[in-house]
Image (tube, rainbow, N blue to C red; front, side, top):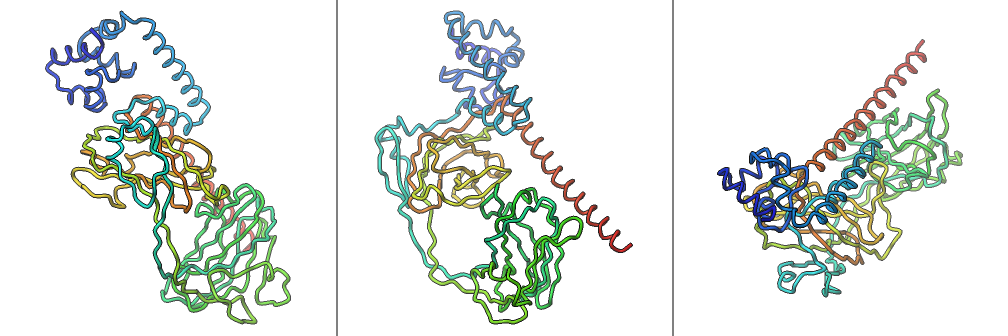
Length: 464
């Protein structure tokens, strides 16, 4: 009698349904079904709890299934011990992200779609849009054939200095004197920057400042941003988020913690040599002797690209307690040096949108998707989407759709999609990751509060 047959026998003997056993062990009913059919084996850490539930010893439960193949069982146990030791080492080192991904990589799949071994019948269940298949034998490879549409929109006017070379470690304030006339009474100034260590524009390196339009503003803005470090290479100021008839900037300065001006540009003084380093983008310059003046442009015939989509609308799978989906794929880009963004000190240049639909809400929508950032152009990669971040991830899964890239000229190879079984190790690693993420957030808040305290002390000393 193998392990699956023994589980079935003891479950029936204890008058338990597959759902009742699954709930007791915090797994899905599909996982229990696979155990009993011999398709998969339960994780070793579940054996003691299962034995206690059935009222038998772990040796009795587990030993009966392996007594005819002790060598295979020992090898499996040794691999598990090696994996757990590696996981513990990473947890102790504080690398929660790597520990979490390692725990997911060792998880069993409740449902798997292997594109490297699919039959033509299985592959026919998957649809493709905005792309064409290049290869389909033992793998599915496709490239984007984007659709285009004409749009007209207002883009944010910007002034940019791309010739900065300034050590900003002691600088904690930026002073800007400006005014803007827009259709709204209130608007928001946004300041972006790049550094040598973080050379890309992204909203992680942005500080906003709300203001009232139609009047001159003298903004003294404290820089409390984790990326505001090392050497400043570019500085960008977006004066308005709405339609603006006119914006004017008179003065920009960077000030250190002692109140000393480390950089300044006075646009009201035509002889200031720094003026030539600033350029106006997405706007039309207006002649003005006392400021850098410009107005917003309306951009017509802007072409937008739809991303490729691969989807399966023929699913009927109970999500249960499953939280993660594993995708193995490769994305090659025409431009290997494509610009990207930085999140938590990690660089990305593309992202995947994973859409789903359920029996209760049987349509794809923006409310039912999860985004995963990744680096394209570096070979085959493994992505893990945390589906539990979406409130609609429950019930019966009826469809799954992948939008893997939004860039033109991409070549995509999709190898594997798996819906992963939650395990005790994954839950432990996830809890540690959440805890460390919260600690980092708290540290950022504390640093911001300390900056404010330092600024107040500086101003009090000024008054005294």
